[in-house]
Length: 97
Image (cartoon, rainbow, N blue to C red; front, side):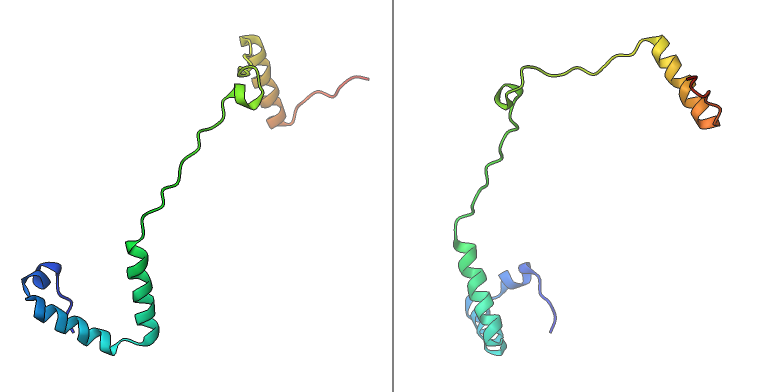
């Protein structure tokens, strides 16, 4: 059986379409018919729309304000780079006690 396009089905008469439909329904199993009935009934029900909730602002969360990121001075950044470089090389100095 060859699959037909919607355009081809639209060209057929109503009588021919009903005959084709009844023929295909007769060969379907009871389970398939039940599923088909359920899907048809379900498609007629109104669509349920879900509401998207907005994120709570800081005031609603109980926080006073937004905490800013910590800023490092150029000297601190240079020291961090040096520390990372020495840690990678494995030449960190031991702490004196």
